[in-house]
Image (tube, rainbow, N blue to C red; front, side):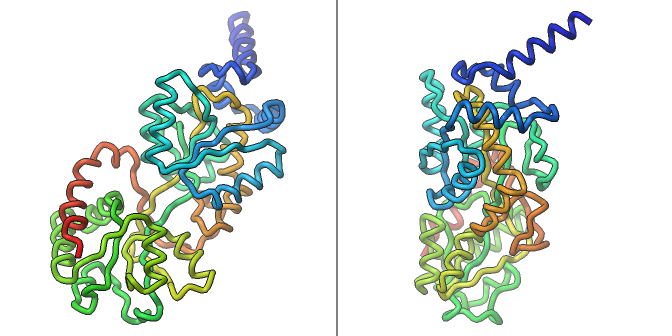
Length: 348
């Protein structure tokens, strides 16, 4: 009995350790605590800490929605630093190597988060909200979670392309009527990998070589830019834009609509808690809030596709294939080479 009491006392001491210690064992104890009073502990600890630091690759406008809801609910300030996912990854790794641990929560695409897992930046979390999420949103190691999906959809200018003329399959893009009308983003090799493996590698690679050779394709850097070019008419039909960006422009009155040829390829964005978080209670409270039904509803109102199965989305029951973050890292050289060879370098 004594050994169990000692073990419990040790765990209790870790759970209540001061946040300033930034000790990985203390953060892990808080992150994996599953008692009935988990939420109460996180709220009390977060209020003592008063703030958290978030590194994110999302737009400030989009993050403002979830951050404002969190701050209003709990009275805990979210300090934010934003850059592209590669820069977020680079900064947090560089800081860790230098013994600096400013970030409490990391928000980025899941390939970047998986890289942070491999660099031992994150801590495993056991959240009661994980059970409500789509399959694949929580990796086996539990060091990050997919909170929303960036679903690759096709956007078209409604003044230049009629709904009746839309391609129903990728083979339809071989039709000469699409010559000079197609656009694609410059770094969507993970989308490309998902589509090609669905079609069958040999068949899929030949198909896209033929599409580019027959009708050409305009390559643009940035999904927001590409979506705006569809709205302006410079690119009548874009193969890879994010659903939420297209929907936001559509709601603003742009002559643009979107749809997707099955299966939809989705790249998850998510978040993880730093293993040396200086504000672990606040970080974990933010983590739980983001994937709770309330937080997921906030994301849905921004036209994101939440990973919670409790939230209805414009995509309804559209079959979706989630990009495997670990596989993306392991096979990135192959698919980057093929995408550059077949799409980017052949662009017209």
